[in-house]
Length: 191
Image (cartoon, rainbow, N blue to C red; front, top):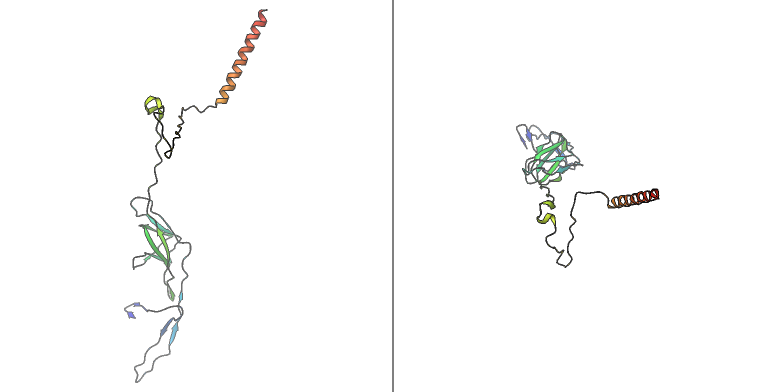
């Protein structure tokens, strides 16, 4: 079908091409020789991926691994949108189709499907209670049980002192030995 400067032809595939001829008028002219315009089809794009939206506005998803030879559309849409750079951005969550555009005697490729996922806010970590803010200086006020049994949960109280107990014990022993040595020296000198 030819309408102005637009030409559309249904049923065109790489297998059957486009048959062109000029029909005669049946009295003074005959049909021209038939010519076949062979067509090809672009290969489906590879490496196309989608990234999820990153804000609660849900409008900044992207499709990557694309270039200006391609076009995309939301799966439910009819109209394809040209891609002008290396990404298609500003997308809402949903399923999108991406294909290589038709050009000259090359048909558009088969579409690949990608999904732009919606933004999901990260979970907030649980807030640790400050033992100094608890009544009785942070002492455990009761017992809690795990999964309904009678075992009491133990709560380790943080003191802010991260030094090694063994180091302090060794220092105590060394101090005791020095005191004992000093005492023996004083007694020996008095004799």
